[in-house]
Each structure stands twice: as structure tokens, then as C-alpha cells.
Image 1 (cartoon, rainbow, N blue to C red):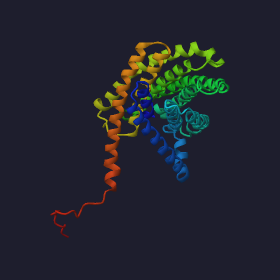
Image 2 (tube, rainbow, N blue to C red):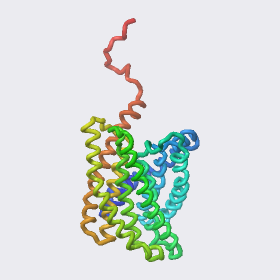
Image 3 (cartoon, rainbow, N blue to C red):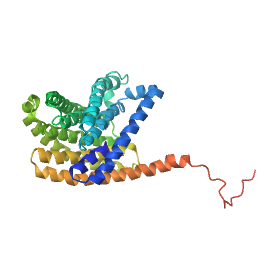
Image 4 (cartoon, rainbow, N blue to C red):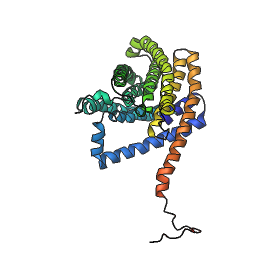
Amino acid sequence: MASGIISVGLDLERDPLLSTALAAVCAGAWATLVVLTVLRLVLAPGGVREELADPRRAFGFFTFVAGTNVLGVRLAGEGLVGWTAALLAVAFGGWLVLGYVVPWTAVLGHTTRPVLAAANGTWFVWVVASQSVAVAAATVQPVLAPGWRGGLALVAVVSWAVGIFLYAAAGVFVALRMMLFDLRPVDLDPSYWVAMGACAITVLAGARILEMADAPMVLATRGLVGGLSVVFWAFATWLLPPLVAAGWWRHRRHGVPLDYDATLWSIVFPLGMYAVAGIYLGRADRLPVVGVVGAAELWVALAAWAAAFVAMAVHLWRTVGRAARPPDDHQPGDRRRPARR
């Protein structure tokens, strides 16, 4: 998701070399994760059921929907609209299934109460998935045959509207969790950045809807979509300083180690999404200041991607790489004496 959205931004800013490289990373990571997920479903279905019943982790399944659509949108930039439509169909089906299964298994069917104590930043991934459907549908709508445009416009606007209501619900639940239950520094992990990423992708979806070909659903909502997109961009901008301050409070004030963890990518994706959303909104709504902010933010997101990638590589070397190396107890020149009994 992080690699794909930054690749989209670089493509918009006319940097084909870096954009293509990150697109390759995105496609390779997507294929690898799909294979690993299928293997997990086959070999360890119990673990999948356990995760689906855990409100702290279950909403992470929506990353499949979001990641699939991010890849599809990037492929549309290469003119591969057919692949974008195919990936949208897969992601749309996953969004519908997970949208009913995850809330039931993780929230309504959870036996431990109160479930609210387990709410965290990953709950906003449901919003990201919904808005990713809107972005992908709005991307392919103008270029497909006219017979498809009305249906795709309906999908784009409905999933965008659903995402807005889900954002309001997730925001209330997470805010109540933070106010009613103890919030330790270790609990304030990078997943809370998804709140800003969900705002940003709502902006991007709105900007893409504004650019769609005329259809009844588009004509009925274009003014509303444009206005709310600006509002969400303003709120996403406002969220940036509190999120940075929370990281400072967590790591500097309370000494939580800043070691590599996969959740660090939860910071990179929102930064990239905020950049792309600003670029698109600046063009769609003729707001040059917003576009300039988005273009500048893109390089911040790229720097964050590079830092996270290097940290991941070092982490893999220290864990997987060293574990795979044979023991070197009998290397030439080893003058250590054998231990006496």
C-alpha cells in the first residue's frame, strides 16, 4: 500500500524511474502476500479464525481490499485499465464479504466485554478499504464503455459515502477508548496514523469522483463531494501535528524503543496518501495551494518509505539472515581453548 501510493504520486509528478521501481515493489509485495495468505488459509485456518475474532487485529484484513485497489490504480497509470477493473472486481467482492463478516466476528460476536477497550487505529482500515473501492471505480469509470459508467459511478459514490459514515463511527469508538480506558505509551502505536490516512483517501476518492464522466449519480452529488473533500483535507492537515506529538510523547518522553516493526508502514502509507490526495484535489477543485502542499509532502513520504525500508532490511538481516547462517564455532584461526570439564 505504501509503495503503491507513493508510486502513484511520483507518476503524477513526472518521475517515471522512481515511480516504476516502487510500482514493481508494490506488485511483487502484493503477489507475495496473496500467496502467503492463501497458504495460511489452507495450512492454519485456526489462526485465521482466531484473528477474525480479535477486535484488535481483525480489521487488518481490510488491507487486502485497499492494497489490491492501490495496485489497480497504479496499473491504470500505465494504461492497463483492464487489470484495474479486474482487481476492482476482486477487491469489491472482498470489501462486501469482510464488511459484514469482520464486524460480526470481531465486535458483535466477541464474548469479552467491553469490546470498546480493544478499539485502536486499525479500525480505520475499514474506511481506507471503502474509499479505495471509490478511488478505483472512479479511475476506470471515464475510460470504460458508456454502458458501464452509470454502474461504476454508483459504486464510487456509494462506497465513498459509506466510508464517510464509517470514519465517523470509527472516530467515535477510538476516541471513547482513549478517554475511558488507560492509554499506555506502548498502546499508542503507529496504527493510529491510519486515522489521517483514512481522511486523506476520502479526499482522493472525492477528487476522483469530481473527474468522472457525467452520470446521474455524479451530477447529483458533485457539489457535495467537492465541498466535503476540502473539509476532509483540512482535517487531515490538522491531524498531522497531534500524530507527530504523540510519537514524540511515546518515544522521547516515555522511552518506548523505536525499533523496527511492521506497523511503521502505517505511517508511510498515510503520508503518501495525504500527498497524492493534495495533488489530485488541487487539480480537481482548482486549489493550487493544496496541490503545492501535496507535491512537497510527497518527498517527505518518499523519505519515510526509504527509512522504513532500510529499517526492515536491517531487521530481516539481524533475525532471518543470521538465523540461517551456519554456526562458526570452528572457523580457521579460532584459538579458543576447549572448555575443561
